[in-house]
Length: 104
Image 1 (spheres, rainbow, N blue to C red):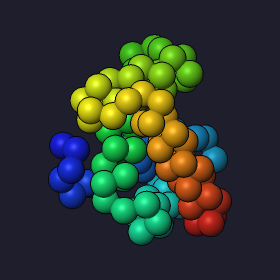
Image 2: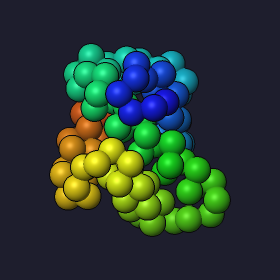
Image 3: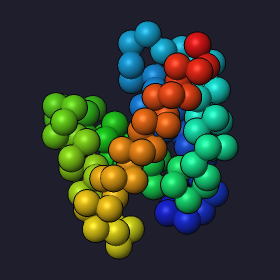
């Protein structure tokens, strides 16, 4: 999904499913709840990070390295500073975790 377009958020759901105990229905619910909470623009950024994160993990990178690399590339692509993007994605991640718990 290009930044700024209406996000499909498939990788937001994918990040949820990357956790062993989460179900498809729970993750779909959480993605919808997150979209309502943070809006399309933030969700597009979060999903862009998610795409890169999941790709890096699939390529064998450890979780922390995959997250850091995903944030760095997305910050550059979006024109945001890495500190600003990290703060925004931390907020989105907390909202996502809250949504996942709320959808159990």
